[in-house]
Amino acid sequence: MMPELPKSTLSNLRQYLPGAESSPATPNQLPQQQLSKREPVKHLLIGSAQAVTITIHRLHLIGYASVGDWSPLLPTANPDEVMSILIRQLLM
Image 1 (tube, rainbow, N blue to C red):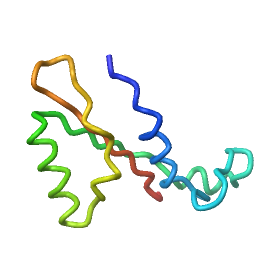
Image 2 (image 1 turned 180 degrees about the vertical axis):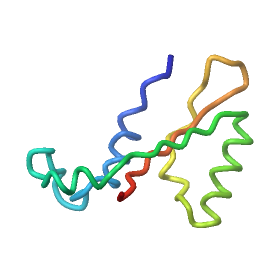
Image 3 (image 1 turned 135 degrees about the horizontal axis):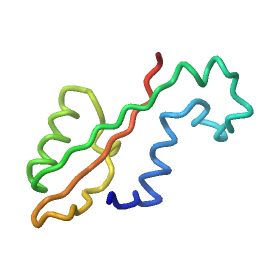
Image 4 (image 1 turned 90 degrees about the horizontal axis):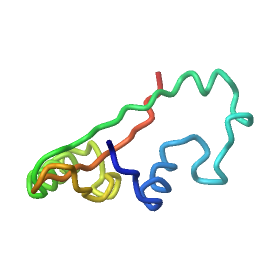
């Protein structure tokens, strides 16, 4: 079972939705054509805290995602293992 993401992480994810700079748009306010052009892709890193942190920083260095775009490190069911998630909305 996957733990629920913290509220702060979920609010950070709004930046990938259309209209995030102003007020969040509801699905009824967006044209159907615009909704169908976006598709989420979820990146999940699982490993030791050190390995996950290093990977997040390397992805930042190559310009893929800012460090702050990732969720905080969350414990998994395995000892000494954490996970972090990044959700992007891709234009299709």
